[in-house]
Length: 259
Length: 342
Image (cartoon, rainbow over all chains, first blue to last red; front, top):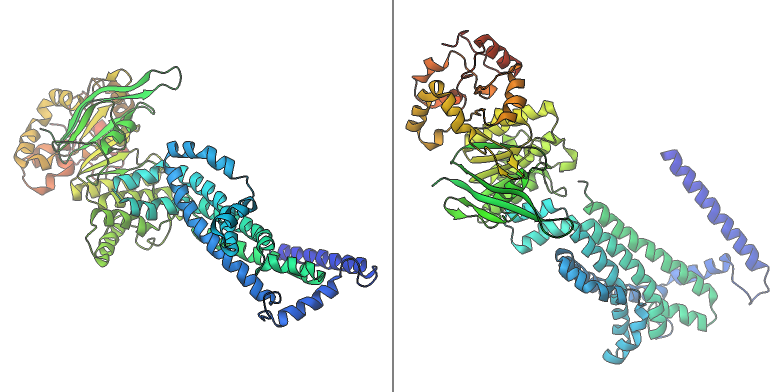
Protein backbone atom coordinates (compact mmCIF):
# COMPACT_ATOMS: atom_id res chain seq x y z
CA UNK A 1 0.00 0.00 0.00
CA UNK A 2 2.69 2.42 1.03
CA UNK A 3 4.94 1.22 -1.78
CA UNK A 4 2.17 1.72 -4.29
CA UNK A 5 1.68 5.21 -3.05
CA UNK A 6 5.37 6.03 -3.36
CA UNK A 7 5.42 4.62 -6.87
CA UNK A 8 2.44 6.75 -7.89
CA UNK A 9 4.04 9.86 -6.46
CA UNK A 10 7.32 9.12 -8.23
CA UNK A 11 5.63 8.56 -11.61
CA UNK A 12 3.51 11.65 -11.16
CA UNK A 13 6.53 13.82 -10.31
CA UNK A 14 8.48 12.47 -13.25
CA UNK A 15 5.62 13.17 -15.68
CA UNK A 16 5.26 16.71 -14.34
CA UNK A 17 8.97 17.34 -14.62
CA UNK A 18 9.03 15.97 -18.18
CA UNK A 19 6.16 18.26 -19.16
CA UNK A 20 7.99 21.25 -17.69
CA UNK A 21 11.18 20.36 -19.55
CA UNK A 22 9.35 19.98 -22.87
CA UNK A 23 7.49 23.22 -22.26
CA UNK A 24 10.70 25.09 -21.44
CA UNK A 25 12.47 23.66 -24.49
CA UNK A 26 9.57 24.65 -26.72
CA UNK A 27 9.36 28.17 -25.25
CA UNK A 28 13.11 28.65 -25.27
CA UNK A 29 13.24 27.89 -29.02
CA UNK A 30 11.06 30.93 -29.79
CA UNK A 31 12.46 34.43 -30.23
CA UNK A 32 12.18 36.62 -27.15
CA UNK A 33 8.93 38.57 -26.79
CA UNK A 34 7.04 36.20 -29.09
CA UNK A 35 5.38 32.85 -28.56
CA UNK A 36 4.47 31.24 -25.26
CA UNK A 37 6.54 32.08 -22.19
CA UNK A 38 8.28 29.13 -20.57
CA UNK A 39 7.86 27.80 -17.07
CA UNK A 40 10.85 29.69 -15.79
CA UNK A 41 9.32 33.00 -16.85
CA UNK A 42 5.99 31.99 -15.29
CA UNK A 43 7.74 31.00 -12.08
CA UNK A 44 9.44 34.37 -11.93
CA UNK A 45 6.11 36.16 -12.35
CA UNK A 46 4.53 33.86 -9.77
CA UNK A 47 7.23 34.67 -7.27
CA UNK A 48 6.75 38.35 -7.93
CA UNK A 49 2.96 38.16 -7.54
CA UNK A 50 2.97 35.93 -4.49
CA UNK A 51 5.46 38.19 -2.74
CA UNK A 52 2.72 40.80 -2.45
CA UNK A 53 -0.64 39.22 -3.27
CA UNK A 54 -2.90 41.77 -1.62
CA UNK A 55 -1.69 45.14 -2.94
CA UNK A 56 -4.21 47.54 -4.36
CA UNK A 57 -3.05 50.20 -6.81
CA UNK A 58 -6.40 51.23 -8.19
CA UNK A 59 -9.05 49.43 -10.25
CA UNK A 60 -6.74 47.95 -12.89
CA UNK A 61 -3.85 46.92 -10.68
CA UNK A 62 -4.68 44.65 -7.77
CA UNK A 63 -2.79 41.70 -6.26
CA UNK A 64 -3.82 38.19 -7.30
CA UNK A 65 -4.86 37.41 -3.72
CA UNK A 66 -7.43 40.21 -3.81
CA UNK A 67 -8.71 39.06 -7.20
CA UNK A 68 -9.13 35.48 -6.01
CA UNK A 69 -10.77 36.67 -2.81
CA UNK A 70 -13.27 38.70 -4.83
CA UNK A 71 -14.10 35.67 -6.96
CA UNK A 72 -14.41 33.41 -3.93
CA UNK A 73 -16.70 35.89 -2.21
CA UNK A 74 -19.04 35.90 -5.23
CA UNK A 75 -18.86 32.14 -5.40
CA UNK A 76 -19.60 31.86 -1.70
CA UNK A 77 -22.72 34.00 -1.85
CA UNK A 78 -24.09 32.64 -5.14
CA UNK A 79 -23.34 29.01 -4.40
CA UNK A 80 -24.62 29.09 -0.81
CA UNK A 81 -27.91 30.72 -1.73
CA UNK A 82 -28.32 28.40 -4.70
CA UNK A 83 -27.58 25.37 -2.53
CA UNK A 84 -30.16 26.32 0.08
CA UNK A 85 -32.78 26.91 -2.61
CA UNK A 86 -31.83 23.75 -4.49
CA UNK A 87 -31.90 21.55 -1.39
CA UNK A 88 -35.28 22.87 -0.28
CA UNK A 89 -36.68 22.53 -3.78
CA UNK A 90 -35.08 19.12 -4.20
CA UNK A 91 -36.60 17.84 -0.96
CA UNK A 92 -40.03 19.01 -2.09
CA UNK A 93 -39.61 17.39 -5.50
CA UNK A 94 -38.20 14.21 -3.99
CA UNK A 95 -41.07 13.78 -1.55
CA UNK A 96 -43.82 14.36 -4.10
CA UNK A 97 -43.70 12.25 -7.25
CA UNK A 98 -46.49 14.38 -8.71
CA UNK A 99 -44.59 17.61 -8.19
CA UNK A 100 -41.43 15.99 -9.49
CA UNK A 101 -43.05 14.93 -12.72
CA UNK A 102 -44.81 18.25 -13.10
CA UNK A 103 -41.67 20.32 -12.63
CA UNK A 104 -39.26 18.02 -14.43
CA UNK A 105 -39.91 19.30 -18.00
CA UNK A 106 -39.06 22.86 -16.99
CA UNK A 107 -35.90 21.75 -15.22
CA UNK A 108 -34.87 19.76 -18.27
CA UNK A 109 -35.27 22.85 -20.50
CA UNK A 110 -33.45 25.22 -18.14
CA UNK A 111 -30.65 22.88 -17.12
CA UNK A 112 -28.66 22.87 -20.39
CA UNK A 113 -28.72 26.68 -20.68
CA UNK A 114 -25.28 28.15 -20.07
CA UNK A 115 -25.49 30.30 -16.97
CA UNK A 116 -23.81 33.09 -18.96
CA UNK A 117 -26.83 33.26 -21.26
CA UNK A 118 -28.76 34.76 -18.34
CA UNK A 119 -26.24 37.56 -17.96
CA UNK A 120 -27.89 40.16 -20.26
CA UNK A 121 -31.22 39.54 -18.62
CA UNK A 122 -29.73 40.05 -15.16
CA UNK A 123 -27.81 43.14 -16.24
CA UNK A 124 -30.95 44.60 -17.73
CA UNK A 125 -33.21 43.86 -14.77
CA UNK A 126 -31.00 44.53 -11.74
CA UNK A 127 -28.54 46.95 -13.42
CA UNK A 128 -25.64 45.90 -11.23
CA UNK A 129 -22.78 43.96 -12.75
CA UNK A 130 -21.45 42.45 -9.54
CA UNK A 131 -24.87 41.17 -8.46
CA UNK A 132 -25.43 39.87 -11.97
CA UNK A 133 -22.25 37.83 -11.67
CA UNK A 134 -23.50 36.40 -8.39
CA UNK A 135 -26.76 35.48 -10.08
CA UNK A 136 -24.84 33.72 -12.83
CA UNK A 137 -23.11 31.68 -10.13
CA UNK A 138 -26.51 31.02 -8.61
CA UNK A 139 -27.84 29.71 -11.91
CA UNK A 140 -24.83 27.54 -12.51
CA UNK A 141 -24.95 25.88 -9.10
CA UNK A 142 -28.69 25.41 -8.89
CA UNK A 143 -29.42 22.48 -11.16
CA UNK A 144 -26.93 19.81 -10.09
CA UNK A 145 -27.85 20.17 -6.42
CA UNK A 146 -31.56 20.31 -7.22
CA UNK A 147 -31.45 17.18 -9.35
CA UNK A 148 -29.26 15.25 -6.91
CA UNK A 149 -31.31 16.22 -3.87
CA UNK A 150 -34.56 15.26 -5.57
CA UNK A 151 -33.07 11.93 -6.55
CA UNK A 152 -31.58 11.34 -3.11
CA UNK A 153 -34.83 12.11 -1.32
CA UNK A 154 -36.96 10.14 -3.76
CA UNK A 155 -34.82 7.05 -3.23
CA UNK A 156 -34.76 7.17 0.57
CA UNK A 157 -35.70 3.72 1.76
CA UNK A 158 -39.35 3.47 2.63
CA UNK A 159 -38.41 1.90 5.98
CA UNK A 160 -36.81 5.05 7.30
CA UNK A 161 -39.88 7.11 6.46
CA UNK A 162 -42.07 4.43 8.01
CA UNK A 163 -40.11 4.64 11.24
CA UNK A 164 -40.47 8.42 11.16
CA UNK A 165 -44.20 8.03 10.58
CA UNK A 166 -44.62 5.57 13.44
CA UNK A 167 -42.65 7.83 15.77
CA UNK A 168 -44.90 10.68 14.61
CA UNK A 169 -42.00 13.04 14.17
CA UNK A 170 -42.92 16.61 13.33
CA UNK A 171 -42.13 17.61 9.76
CA UNK A 172 -39.15 19.61 10.94
CA UNK A 173 -37.67 16.76 12.96
CA UNK A 174 -38.45 14.39 10.14
CA UNK A 175 -36.52 16.66 7.79
CA UNK A 176 -33.55 17.14 10.09
CA UNK A 177 -33.24 13.66 11.59
CA UNK A 178 -34.34 11.45 8.73
CA UNK A 179 -34.72 13.00 5.29
CA UNK A 180 -31.62 15.19 5.11
CA UNK A 181 -29.21 12.66 6.70
CA UNK A 182 -30.59 9.88 4.52
CA UNK A 183 -30.17 11.92 1.35
CA UNK A 184 -26.95 13.58 2.50
CA UNK A 185 -24.56 11.56 0.32
CA UNK A 186 -26.55 12.39 -2.81
CA UNK A 187 -26.93 16.02 -1.78
CA UNK A 188 -23.20 16.47 -1.18
CA UNK A 189 -22.46 14.85 -4.53
CA UNK A 190 -24.69 17.51 -6.06
CA UNK A 191 -22.96 20.25 -4.10
CA UNK A 192 -19.59 19.09 -5.40
CA UNK A 193 -20.73 19.21 -9.01
CA UNK A 194 -22.31 22.60 -8.36
CA UNK A 195 -19.27 24.22 -6.87
CA UNK A 196 -17.15 22.89 -9.73
CA UNK A 197 -19.40 24.27 -12.43
CA UNK A 198 -19.83 27.55 -10.53
CA UNK A 199 -16.06 27.97 -10.36
CA UNK A 200 -15.89 27.33 -14.08
CA UNK A 201 -18.63 29.86 -14.79
CA UNK A 202 -17.26 32.63 -12.62
CA UNK A 203 -14.15 33.17 -14.76
CA UNK A 204 -16.24 33.80 -17.85
CA UNK A 205 -18.75 35.93 -15.93
CA UNK A 206 -16.02 38.15 -14.52
CA UNK A 207 -14.44 38.56 -17.94
CA UNK A 208 -17.75 40.02 -19.03
CA UNK A 209 -18.49 42.25 -16.07
CA UNK A 210 -14.97 43.51 -15.40
CA UNK A 211 -13.95 45.29 -12.24
CA UNK A 212 -12.58 42.63 -9.91
CA UNK A 213 -12.16 38.90 -9.76
CA UNK A 214 -9.82 36.34 -11.19
CA UNK A 215 -11.69 36.23 -14.50
CA UNK A 216 -11.31 39.95 -14.94
CA UNK A 217 -7.65 39.59 -13.96
CA UNK A 218 -7.05 37.04 -16.71
CA UNK A 219 -8.70 39.26 -19.29
CA UNK A 220 -6.84 42.34 -18.09
CA UNK A 221 -3.47 40.58 -18.25
CA UNK A 222 -4.34 39.41 -21.75
CA UNK A 223 -4.98 43.02 -22.73
CA UNK A 224 -1.57 43.82 -21.24
CA UNK A 225 -0.13 40.89 -23.21
CA UNK A 226 1.26 39.63 -19.87
CA UNK A 227 0.98 35.94 -20.72
CA UNK A 228 3.04 34.81 -17.76
CA UNK A 229 0.37 36.28 -15.49
CA UNK A 230 -2.36 34.56 -17.50
CA UNK A 231 -0.66 31.20 -17.15
CA UNK A 232 -0.10 31.71 -13.45
CA UNK A 233 -3.75 32.70 -13.03
CA UNK A 234 -4.81 29.51 -14.82
CA UNK A 235 -2.79 27.47 -12.36
CA UNK A 236 -4.20 29.41 -9.43
CA UNK A 237 -7.78 28.83 -10.65
CA UNK A 238 -7.10 25.13 -10.97
CA UNK A 239 -5.56 24.92 -7.52
CA UNK A 240 -8.47 26.72 -5.86
CA UNK A 241 -10.86 24.39 -7.69
CA UNK A 242 -9.04 21.38 -6.22
CA UNK A 243 -9.20 22.85 -2.72
CA UNK A 244 -12.94 23.55 -3.01
CA UNK A 245 -13.58 20.01 -4.14
CA UNK A 246 -11.37 18.55 -1.44
CA UNK A 247 -13.30 20.41 1.24
CA UNK A 248 -16.62 18.99 0.02
CA UNK A 249 -15.06 15.58 -0.36
CA UNK A 250 -14.23 15.64 3.33
CA UNK A 251 -17.80 16.63 4.10
CA UNK A 252 -19.03 13.80 1.93
CA UNK A 253 -16.91 11.27 3.82
CA UNK A 254 -18.28 12.52 7.11
CA UNK A 255 -21.88 12.21 5.99
CA UNK A 256 -21.51 8.88 4.23
CA UNK A 257 -23.11 5.81 5.79
CA UNK A 258 -23.35 2.14 4.99
CA UNK A 259 -26.71 0.46 5.22
CA UNK B 1 -65.22 -5.35 23.29
CA UNK B 2 -61.79 -6.74 22.67
CA UNK B 3 -58.57 -4.82 23.02
CA UNK B 4 -57.48 -5.02 19.41
CA UNK B 5 -60.04 -5.96 16.79
CA UNK B 6 -59.21 -6.76 13.23
CA UNK B 7 -62.64 -6.32 11.76
CA UNK B 8 -63.31 -7.82 8.33
CA UNK B 9 -60.21 -6.29 6.85
CA UNK B 10 -59.84 -6.60 3.10
CA UNK B 11 -56.87 -5.51 1.05
CA UNK B 12 -56.93 -5.01 -2.69
CA UNK B 13 -54.01 -3.92 -4.79
CA UNK B 14 -54.33 -2.47 -8.28
CA UNK B 15 -53.44 -5.19 -10.75
CA UNK B 16 -50.10 -4.87 -12.47
CA UNK B 17 -51.67 -4.97 -15.90
CA UNK B 18 -55.07 -4.75 -17.51
CA UNK B 19 -56.62 -2.70 -14.72
CA UNK B 20 -58.80 -4.26 -12.08
CA UNK B 21 -57.69 -5.28 -8.66
CA UNK B 22 -55.95 -8.17 -7.04
CA UNK B 23 -57.25 -9.39 -3.73
CA UNK B 24 -54.53 -9.96 -1.18
CA UNK B 25 -56.93 -11.11 1.49
CA UNK B 26 -60.58 -10.65 2.28
CA UNK B 27 -62.54 -10.38 5.49
CA UNK B 28 -59.76 -11.09 7.91
CA UNK B 29 -61.46 -11.11 11.24
CA UNK B 30 -60.00 -11.77 14.66
CA UNK B 31 -59.49 -10.25 18.06
CA UNK B 32 -56.55 -9.92 20.36
CA UNK B 33 -56.91 -9.39 24.08
CA UNK B 34 -54.70 -7.15 26.10
CA UNK B 35 -51.41 -8.74 27.05
CA UNK B 36 -51.68 -11.54 24.54
CA UNK B 37 -48.92 -12.67 22.24
CA UNK B 38 -50.47 -13.75 18.98
CA UNK B 39 -48.57 -15.03 16.00
CA UNK B 40 -49.76 -15.32 12.45
CA UNK B 41 -48.10 -18.00 10.40
CA UNK B 42 -48.23 -18.00 6.66
CA UNK B 43 -46.34 -18.41 3.44
CA UNK B 44 -44.23 -15.65 2.02
CA UNK B 45 -46.40 -13.29 0.02
CA UNK B 46 -49.67 -14.37 1.59
CA UNK B 47 -50.35 -10.89 2.88
CA UNK B 48 -49.47 -11.24 6.52
CA UNK B 49 -47.00 -8.37 6.42
CA UNK B 50 -49.61 -6.27 4.64
CA UNK B 51 -52.02 -7.01 7.44
CA UNK B 52 -49.40 -6.03 9.99
CA UNK B 53 -48.79 -2.78 8.12
CA UNK B 54 -52.50 -2.06 8.18
CA UNK B 55 -52.55 -2.55 11.95
CA UNK B 56 -49.48 -0.30 12.16
CA UNK B 57 -51.32 2.32 10.12
CA UNK B 58 -48.68 2.34 7.41
CA UNK B 59 -51.17 1.02 4.87
CA UNK B 60 -54.88 1.53 4.52
CA UNK B 61 -57.31 -1.34 4.35
CA UNK B 62 -59.52 -1.49 1.25
CA UNK B 63 -62.39 -2.66 3.41
CA UNK B 64 -63.09 -3.20 7.07
CA UNK B 65 -60.93 -1.71 9.75
CA UNK B 66 -58.76 -2.17 12.80
CA UNK B 67 -59.93 -0.98 16.19
CA UNK B 68 -57.62 -0.50 19.13
CA UNK B 69 -59.28 0.20 22.48
CA UNK B 70 -62.46 1.18 20.72
CA UNK B 71 -60.82 3.63 18.36
CA UNK B 72 -60.26 3.00 14.69
CA UNK B 73 -56.70 3.02 13.44
CA UNK B 74 -56.18 5.30 10.50
CA UNK B 75 -52.57 6.38 10.77
CA UNK B 76 -49.33 5.30 12.40
CA UNK B 77 -48.97 6.15 16.06
CA UNK B 78 -46.77 5.78 19.08
CA UNK B 79 -49.19 3.30 20.62
CA UNK B 80 -48.14 0.71 18.02
CA UNK B 81 -44.45 0.11 17.46
CA UNK B 82 -43.14 -2.10 14.70
CA UNK B 83 -40.06 -4.28 14.78
CA UNK B 84 -39.05 -4.77 11.16
CA UNK B 85 -37.57 -7.78 9.47
CA UNK B 86 -34.74 -5.68 8.02
CA UNK B 87 -34.30 -3.82 11.33
CA UNK B 88 -34.88 -0.39 9.73
CA UNK B 89 -32.37 1.33 11.93
CA UNK B 90 -31.14 4.71 10.78
CA UNK B 91 -27.68 3.82 9.46
CA UNK B 92 -26.28 7.31 10.00
CA UNK B 93 -27.12 7.21 13.69
CA UNK B 94 -25.38 5.37 16.47
CA UNK B 95 -27.11 2.64 18.46
CA UNK B 96 -27.76 5.13 21.22
CA UNK B 97 -29.17 7.78 18.89
CA UNK B 98 -31.45 5.29 17.19
CA UNK B 99 -33.08 4.44 20.49
CA UNK B 100 -33.02 8.04 21.63
CA UNK B 101 -34.93 9.09 18.53
CA UNK B 102 -37.77 6.87 19.70
CA UNK B 103 -37.58 7.86 23.36
CA UNK B 104 -37.58 11.54 22.48
CA UNK B 105 -40.57 11.00 20.23
CA UNK B 106 -42.40 9.20 23.03
CA UNK B 107 -41.48 11.77 25.67
CA UNK B 108 -41.00 15.15 24.00
CA UNK B 109 -41.26 16.94 27.35
CA UNK B 110 -38.45 15.04 29.04
CA UNK B 111 -35.16 16.64 29.92
CA UNK B 112 -32.15 15.48 27.99
CA UNK B 113 -30.50 13.73 30.93
CA UNK B 114 -33.71 11.92 31.66
CA UNK B 115 -34.00 10.74 28.07
CA UNK B 116 -30.40 9.58 28.04
CA UNK B 117 -30.80 7.63 31.25
CA UNK B 118 -33.90 5.95 29.88
CA UNK B 119 -32.13 5.08 26.62
CA UNK B 120 -29.20 3.64 28.53
CA UNK B 121 -31.55 1.43 30.49
CA UNK B 122 -32.83 -0.16 27.30
CA UNK B 123 -29.33 -0.42 25.83
CA UNK B 124 -28.33 -2.35 28.94
CA UNK B 125 -31.50 -4.42 28.84
CA UNK B 126 -30.66 -5.86 25.43
CA UNK B 127 -27.01 -6.36 26.32
CA UNK B 128 -25.56 -3.73 24.03
CA UNK B 129 -23.67 -1.91 26.76
CA UNK B 130 -20.39 -0.73 25.29
CA UNK B 131 -21.73 -0.64 21.73
CA UNK B 132 -23.75 2.55 22.16
CA UNK B 133 -21.49 4.62 19.92
CA UNK B 134 -21.38 2.08 17.13
CA UNK B 135 -23.38 2.46 13.97
CA UNK B 136 -25.67 -0.33 12.81
CA UNK B 137 -23.35 -1.25 9.94
CA UNK B 138 -20.74 -2.25 12.52
CA UNK B 139 -23.13 -4.68 14.21
CA UNK B 140 -24.19 -8.23 13.43
CA UNK B 141 -27.76 -8.97 12.43
CA UNK B 142 -28.58 -10.21 15.89
CA UNK B 143 -27.22 -7.10 17.56
CA UNK B 144 -29.09 -4.88 15.11
CA UNK B 145 -32.35 -6.54 15.92
CA UNK B 146 -31.60 -6.07 19.61
CA UNK B 147 -31.43 -2.38 18.86
CA UNK B 148 -34.72 -2.74 16.99
CA UNK B 149 -36.32 -4.43 20.01
CA UNK B 150 -34.89 -1.86 22.41
CA UNK B 151 -36.18 0.95 20.20
CA UNK B 152 -39.64 -0.58 20.09
CA UNK B 153 -39.89 -1.40 23.79
CA UNK B 154 -38.40 1.92 24.87
CA UNK B 155 -41.50 3.77 23.70
CA UNK B 156 -43.62 1.48 25.87
CA UNK B 157 -46.22 0.89 23.17
CA UNK B 158 -49.62 -0.59 23.80
CA UNK B 159 -49.20 -2.95 20.90
CA UNK B 160 -45.97 -4.34 19.55
CA UNK B 161 -46.00 -5.47 15.93
CA UNK B 162 -43.26 -7.88 14.92
CA UNK B 163 -42.76 -8.38 11.19
CA UNK B 164 -40.67 -11.54 10.82
CA UNK B 165 -38.23 -10.09 13.30
CA UNK B 166 -35.88 -13.06 13.35
CA UNK B 167 -35.88 -13.99 9.68
CA UNK B 168 -32.53 -12.37 8.96
CA UNK B 169 -30.79 -13.58 12.09
CA UNK B 170 -28.69 -16.71 12.09
CA UNK B 171 -30.17 -19.73 13.79
CA UNK B 172 -27.76 -19.75 16.72
CA UNK B 173 -28.42 -16.16 17.68
CA UNK B 174 -32.12 -16.40 17.01
CA UNK B 175 -32.89 -18.45 20.10
CA UNK B 176 -31.07 -16.03 22.36
CA UNK B 177 -32.90 -13.04 20.98
CA UNK B 178 -36.22 -14.84 21.11
CA UNK B 179 -35.58 -15.40 24.80
CA UNK B 180 -34.78 -11.73 25.14
CA UNK B 181 -38.03 -10.84 23.41
CA UNK B 182 -39.98 -13.08 25.78
CA UNK B 183 -38.21 -11.57 28.76
CA UNK B 184 -38.94 -8.02 27.69
CA UNK B 185 -42.49 -8.88 26.81
CA UNK B 186 -42.99 -10.55 30.18
CA UNK B 187 -41.68 -7.45 31.91
CA UNK B 188 -43.74 -5.01 29.85
CA UNK B 189 -46.85 -7.13 29.31
CA UNK B 190 -47.63 -5.31 26.14
CA UNK B 191 -49.84 -6.90 23.53
CA UNK B 192 -47.89 -8.47 20.72
CA UNK B 193 -48.86 -9.41 17.20
CA UNK B 194 -46.18 -11.18 15.22
CA UNK B 195 -46.10 -12.52 11.70
CA UNK B 196 -43.67 -15.20 10.66
CA UNK B 197 -43.30 -18.11 8.30
CA UNK B 198 -41.43 -20.08 10.92
CA UNK B 199 -43.87 -22.45 12.56
CA UNK B 200 -41.54 -23.42 15.37
CA UNK B 201 -40.92 -19.81 16.21
CA UNK B 202 -44.66 -19.20 16.34
CA UNK B 203 -45.18 -22.09 18.70
CA UNK B 204 -42.27 -21.20 20.92
CA UNK B 205 -43.26 -17.60 21.35
CA UNK B 206 -46.96 -17.17 21.25
CA UNK B 207 -50.17 -17.45 23.18
CA UNK B 208 -52.08 -18.17 20.06
CA UNK B 209 -51.23 -19.06 16.53
CA UNK B 210 -53.29 -17.80 13.67
CA UNK B 211 -52.91 -19.68 10.48
CA UNK B 212 -52.31 -18.13 7.11
CA UNK B 213 -54.17 -15.38 5.45
CA UNK B 214 -55.54 -16.91 2.32
CA UNK B 215 -56.04 -15.48 -1.08
CA UNK B 216 -59.74 -16.16 -1.03
CA UNK B 217 -60.29 -15.10 2.49
CA UNK B 218 -59.24 -16.32 5.82
CA UNK B 219 -59.49 -19.87 6.83
CA UNK B 220 -59.12 -20.85 10.40
CA UNK B 221 -57.67 -17.62 11.55
CA UNK B 222 -57.49 -17.91 15.27
CA UNK B 223 -59.92 -20.74 15.46
CA UNK B 224 -56.98 -22.70 16.72
CA UNK B 225 -57.45 -21.70 20.27
CA UNK B 226 -61.08 -22.62 20.58
CA UNK B 227 -60.56 -25.91 18.80
CA UNK B 228 -57.59 -26.66 20.95
CA UNK B 229 -59.45 -25.96 24.11
CA UNK B 230 -62.26 -28.26 23.06
CA UNK B 231 -59.94 -31.09 22.36
CA UNK B 232 -57.80 -30.51 25.34
CA UNK B 233 -60.60 -29.67 27.68
CA UNK B 234 -59.65 -32.14 30.33
CA UNK B 235 -56.09 -31.05 30.43
CA UNK B 236 -56.66 -27.35 30.31
CA UNK B 237 -59.80 -26.92 32.30
CA UNK B 238 -58.16 -26.40 35.63
CA UNK B 239 -55.96 -23.67 34.27
CA UNK B 240 -58.74 -21.86 32.52
CA UNK B 241 -60.42 -21.40 35.84
CA UNK B 242 -57.30 -20.01 37.27
CA UNK B 243 -56.85 -17.66 34.37
CA UNK B 244 -60.28 -16.34 35.13
CA UNK B 245 -59.28 -15.57 38.67
CA UNK B 246 -56.11 -13.88 37.65
CA UNK B 247 -57.73 -11.60 35.16
CA UNK B 248 -56.89 -10.68 31.61
CA UNK B 249 -53.30 -9.78 32.38
CA UNK B 250 -52.50 -13.33 33.29
CA UNK B 251 -53.09 -14.77 29.86
CA UNK B 252 -50.08 -16.91 29.26
CA UNK B 253 -48.24 -17.97 26.24
CA UNK B 254 -49.24 -21.14 24.59
CA UNK B 255 -49.75 -22.28 21.12
CA UNK B 256 -52.46 -24.80 20.59
CA UNK B 257 -52.29 -26.76 17.41
CA UNK B 258 -55.54 -28.31 16.38
CA UNK B 259 -57.15 -30.15 13.53
CA UNK B 260 -58.18 -27.10 11.61
CA UNK B 261 -54.68 -25.82 11.25
CA UNK B 262 -53.43 -28.81 9.36
CA UNK B 263 -50.23 -27.35 7.96
CA UNK B 264 -49.16 -26.18 11.32
CA UNK B 265 -49.59 -29.60 12.80
CA UNK B 266 -47.78 -31.32 9.97
CA UNK B 267 -44.97 -28.87 9.69
CA UNK B 268 -44.53 -27.79 13.23
CA UNK B 269 -45.66 -30.10 15.93
CA UNK B 270 -44.81 -33.26 14.10
CA UNK B 271 -41.31 -31.98 13.65
CA UNK B 272 -41.27 -30.83 17.21
CA UNK B 273 -42.07 -34.26 18.51
CA UNK B 274 -40.27 -36.21 15.88
CA UNK B 275 -43.36 -38.21 15.06
CA UNK B 276 -46.81 -38.00 13.57
CA UNK B 277 -49.14 -36.64 16.16
CA UNK B 278 -52.46 -37.26 14.48
CA UNK B 279 -55.17 -34.93 15.64
CA UNK B 280 -53.31 -33.92 18.69
CA UNK B 281 -53.27 -30.68 20.47
CA UNK B 282 -49.85 -29.54 21.42
CA UNK B 283 -47.98 -26.88 23.23
CA UNK B 284 -44.87 -24.95 22.81
CA UNK B 285 -41.84 -26.85 24.08
CA UNK B 286 -40.93 -24.22 26.63
CA UNK B 287 -44.13 -25.03 28.46
CA UNK B 288 -43.82 -28.77 28.58
CA UNK B 289 -44.11 -29.84 32.19
CA UNK B 290 -45.23 -33.41 32.15
CA UNK B 291 -46.51 -34.71 35.42
CA UNK B 292 -45.90 -31.51 37.32
CA UNK B 293 -48.83 -29.64 36.08
CA UNK B 294 -51.38 -30.93 38.51
CA UNK B 295 -49.24 -30.52 41.56
CA UNK B 296 -48.36 -26.96 40.80
CA UNK B 297 -51.85 -26.21 39.65
CA UNK B 298 -53.03 -25.88 43.21
CA UNK B 299 -50.59 -23.16 43.93
CA UNK B 300 -51.42 -19.54 43.51
CA UNK B 301 -49.17 -16.63 42.76
CA UNK B 302 -46.67 -15.27 40.36
CA UNK B 303 -44.53 -18.30 39.84
CA UNK B 304 -47.04 -19.90 37.59
CA UNK B 305 -47.00 -17.12 35.09
CA UNK B 306 -45.34 -17.78 31.80
CA UNK B 307 -44.61 -21.44 31.49
CA UNK B 308 -46.95 -22.52 34.22
CA UNK B 309 -50.18 -22.40 32.37
CA UNK B 310 -48.69 -23.49 29.13
CA UNK B 311 -49.92 -26.98 29.91
CA UNK B 312 -48.30 -30.20 29.01
CA UNK B 313 -48.53 -32.15 25.88
CA UNK B 314 -52.22 -32.69 25.95
CA UNK B 315 -54.16 -35.43 24.18
CA UNK B 316 -52.72 -37.78 21.70
CA UNK B 317 -51.56 -41.20 22.50
CA UNK B 318 -47.83 -40.76 22.68
CA UNK B 319 -46.22 -41.93 25.85
CA UNK B 320 -44.76 -39.30 28.17
CA UNK B 321 -41.22 -40.44 27.57
CA UNK B 322 -41.51 -39.24 24.02
CA UNK B 323 -42.73 -35.93 25.24
CA UNK B 324 -39.75 -35.74 27.51
CA UNK B 325 -37.47 -36.54 24.68
CA UNK B 326 -38.98 -33.79 22.60
CA UNK B 327 -38.44 -31.44 25.44
CA UNK B 328 -34.78 -32.32 25.67
CA UNK B 329 -34.37 -32.04 21.95
CA UNK B 330 -35.67 -28.53 22.06
CA UNK B 331 -33.15 -27.57 24.67
CA UNK B 332 -35.70 -27.15 27.40
CA UNK B 333 -33.82 -25.88 30.40
CA UNK B 334 -36.13 -27.48 32.90
CA UNK B 335 -36.91 -31.06 31.86
CA UNK B 336 -39.83 -32.81 33.46
CA UNK B 337 -39.04 -34.67 36.63
CA UNK B 338 -41.88 -37.14 36.65
CA UNK B 339 -42.07 -39.82 34.08
CA UNK B 340 -45.77 -40.36 33.91
CA UNK B 341 -48.58 -38.37 32.50
CA UNK B 342 -51.21 -38.98 35.09
